[in-house]
Every structure is written in structure tokens, then in C-alpha cells.
Length: 151
Image (cartoon, rainbow, N blue to C red; front, side, top):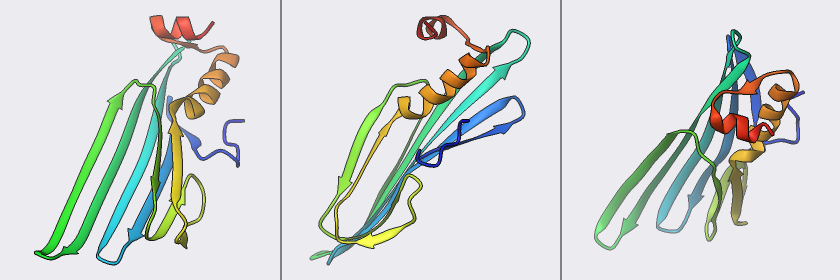
């Protein structure tokens, strides 16, 4: 079974693909003179080739950060969007503190508090269970790297 309630991600099948989705975090912070918002997500798309019994995958990591504030000179507004696609290994952690935070991390319901918001992300947490499940059901990873990791 792939979808386990204590994991921060979920999987679903669509045609010849299995898609893993992880809403890493959504955080809005309010400070006396500014507000910030961050949204991070990750998608793992595994495509199964039934003809040769293999699978391959692609990853998409997206993040947005916005900030609005009041300064001595007036009003500021800024933001940044990033996305990465392809194959990668990643570990990261983030925190926000010092304001009133409304946050949801993983599958948690949004909560509001002044406590720091801390969250982490590691690609192996979502890839390892899916790739292990596929290999235990007879599928092998396509390409040289897949053959090395299948050992």
C-alpha cells in the first residue's frame, strides 16, 4: 500500500503513470510592517512502460515567495517564483519566526500561532517507497542509474 496516513504525500494513478504529490508547506506570516507568503510543492511522475517492464520518472519542484510591506519610503511589493524539473536528489529545511503565522505543512490542517514554522523536505522520502513498491512488483528502473539503484 502506497498511501499511508502518517506520510506527508499521496499517490494516484492516471493512465500509465503514477503521480506522487507533496504539498510541502504553505506559510503566511504577519509582522507589524509586512506580510510574507511562501508556498512549496513537489510532484513525482512515474511513467510505466508495459512493453519492456520498466519505469522512468520526472520531478517538478515549485516554490513561490511573496512579500508586501510598509517602509519609511512607502509601500513595497516583491516576489519570487522558482521551479525545477528533471531528476534530482534534494534535502532542505526552512523556518520562519517572529510574526503571527498561518501555516500548513505536509497534510496538517492550517493553524495560526506565533510559534516558529519549521518544515523539511527530502526527495528520498517520496521516491523510495514508490520505487521499492514498483520493483517488488516486477518493474525495473529504466537506464543505467536505475540498474545501479535497483541493487
